[in-house]
Amino acid sequence: MKDSSSNQISLPELAEIFSEDYFHFGDVVNPPEKSDQQAGVIWDHLSLAKGISVLELGCGYGRITNRLAEKGARVAGLDISPVLLKKAEADAAERGVNVEYFLGDMRSLPWRDRFDAVFLWYTTFGYFDDPDNERVLREAASSLRKGGRLLIDHANYFAFLRHESPIYVVQRNDDLRIDIMSNDVIRDRRNIERIFVRDGCVRRTQLSFRQYGFSAFVRMLRSAGFESVEAYGQEGGTFTSDSSSLVVVACK
Ligand SMILES: C[S@@+](CC[C@H](N)C(=O)[O-])C[C@H]1O[C@@H](n2cnc3c(N)ncnc32)[C@H](O)[C@@H]1O
Image 1 (cartoon, rainbow, N blue to C red):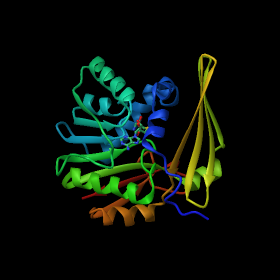
Image 2: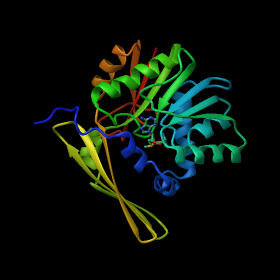
Image 3: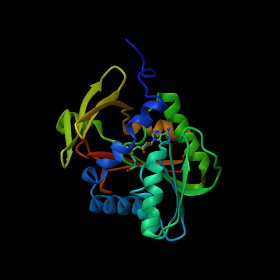
Image 4: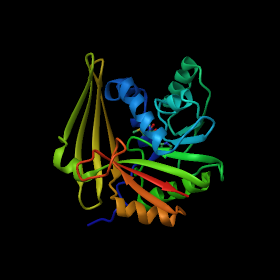
């Protein structure tokens, strides 16, 4: 039996997954109206307002960051994927918004007491082992000013175990993205074999993230320096075992 520190995913493996292929299926998985709605949920949970400074860790191709900038926040986004950051910058230019994009690793951030809010959205927390996942929380805490808020959107494994099919297929024209999911009950991780089929070529990638429940978040966030920690369902309501996501909001 191995402990939960093994099976974490390396940075080169993450870069393989979060590539042009990931972007290609982005709008099918998250159509614009869904991204609009999600940006609204984040705006409300983080009590954002015009001029408030907000950082997204793992911002991908900027589908949320650019929308928050359109609503008037001062936005920064950090990601390890140069390909996705280029897409984010192009979309920001098209929308006529100003977002600062940074290439970097969320486990080591350059900011101290700088942002009013930080968030990780769409299952972007948990790729690493426990010490590194906790490091992300400490770095987020350091980047926030006193009183700042952190939001994390995490898959709710109670709902996943009951409702979700182990195979999820996304189609765009003749191209396919096939996710084959399995639960590693020894390491409390969800493993995803993601197969991209584009123009007849097949590319296989692996993704894995740690599954944390709310009480684990409370323990980790308090030890990272947060004073209060609350749980919500994805649409902003009460968190229950049926909620598709656990949205954690912590205040420094
Ligand atoms: C599931 S995607 C979510 C993207 C975006 N939050 C959204 O809602 O569309 C996860 C993102 O995290 C980024 N990522 C993964 N590991 C990272 C790390 N160590 N530091 C910064 N970004 C990372 C990936 O490149 C990818 O863009």
